[in-house]
Length: 266
Image 1 (tube, rainbow, N blue to C red):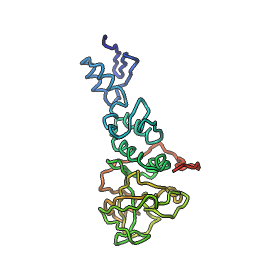
Image 2: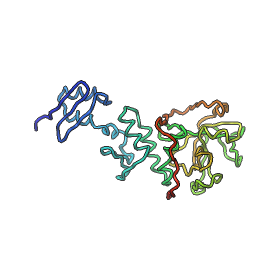
Image 3: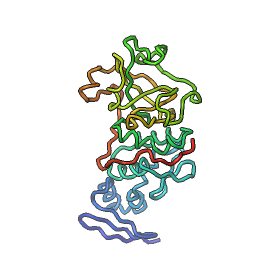
Image 4: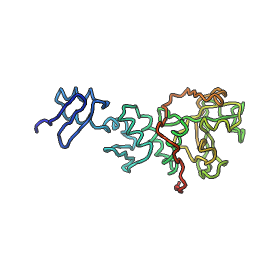
């Protein structure tokens, strides 16, 4: 079989081989593509031009596969803000491994509502991901690190706090109910408690986000206390995370309807 034909300009490359493959000089693999083109390694050129090719290297054994612009989990297509963000940011050259791991953990959550809306909630509240696919949240506790409600749960750094998921209220319309509570920075002034701790939460352990206080707190069944934070953070608005985090931000989000009125099965 003859080699593919191609057209190379200062800022674009088009290869003709089993279809038309095109990329521009802002492609994250542009230099590698040109090097492979010089070596006439056309199969490698075409693979490097595919925007989803690099994602395959860290989706192995996660249940996540990508074909074209579609992300699959165990063969079922996934859609939504998180999937779109993964594809877009990866194409822009960002390291999205933490987001893929977050998606993998999220798919273990039995709640449809949580799977569909948790990432949007995190973007809204600027709650960062960790590099193992969890996320960071805040919690105010008593001076002895015991919880504010029962005074029986130890929240000292290094502690893992958990309860059976079936005992956590999954109805977001019941705003004060059973469960372990963590929150965003915006909710901290609504708490009392003389100490502030940072908590690491696996997305599979999120049960519900109550509808009060503009969706700034949530009920979970398990979290890990990472460290004590200065209580002054409640008022000065700055952030401080000992845990390595992957920032979650959305520059183009304008007053989204995070929790529509439709009923979602759990």
